[in-house]
Image (cartoon, rainbow over all chains, first blue to last red; front, side, top):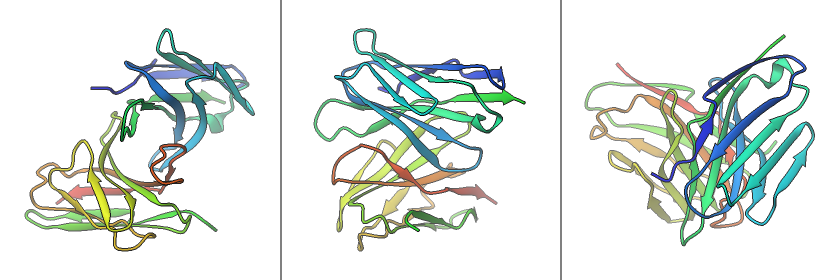
Length: 112
Length: 114
């Protein structure tokens, strides 16, 4: 399977702390994306980083990509209770007709 | 208010019954997708369509069928051949055609077996 793997599977932090989530993948990619899912809802796109980029920011989100290690990290700074959700990384592998492959997700709980 | 609408929110299937999940988008996107999500699992691609009147099998197409007669609509039928249909089903769309960039998702349909 080409599925990416997130780490840790679950994370519990206090409001105001930073949350760091990691994603590893197996083969060359065009881009890597992070999505968020609230319980029982659809996924919402957070950020996309291309294979030639090393870091991107969006508000309180910071994503890094290390293609030599085939890994990415998502940092949420100054977390809030409303950040409680599942977070998924999705990779678009190189090659014709490649579709996004999603990992199993990380469950983030932010305690008030 | 643009977006993707999935209906119904909850659906129950009896043994041997086919059921159809609706997905409508008003984002003018060319590509549409169906994913299945099981508890604690990632999303698995069932079918996708990059243009009207054309669709392709994903990783787990067996027991499912789709149609794409209109750009706005991509219904998914879960047939009686799908022996383990209980799951959360998500529809998504993207643009431009064929690009995986930024999928927009509906709010999902939870399918359960009676």
